[in-house]
Length: 216
Image (cartoon, rainbow, N blue to C red):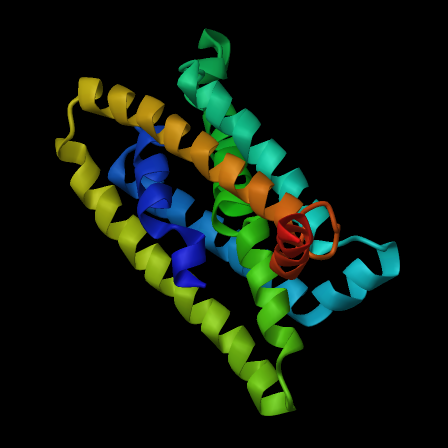
């Protein structure tokens, strides 16, 4: 699950998207985003399978939808549309407006769908489906909490180290992070299409059978 979360990419995105924040604001944003992601993923750990079954949603379609949303976010970052640039001069003079904007960034896109994204949620649901007893089921929820806690430690360390980065490096990393995010979204989209739930991608056995028929 830690690998699926892509922690290094999230750290780079976090530093880039909070380039104008102080160390305290970065720490507060990291805490909020990790708590939001923890709540969302744990919710799907407990109820995800039933929710997908009730609404008739397949894992593949969920990955495709998440891939599209993340790709749009990466495209905006490539176009250098930093969320902080959306704040007007009047809002900057208002002490409540910036706090609200930073809270929005912490919840989305940092909390969801970057940290608690479709790949993490899908992986959590798949692992919980393999649980044979309540002990393994509870262990899966604890594992999710540990993974997000480790990610928070990484974000906290990057919050203190980012103050040494120059504005040019931050802007460059912001655009490069957008490219990485777009690539991750494409990979998520392809994995969704290849999912056996949708049946859009032929299985390896089917490909082998077609190849054998062609040879004969």
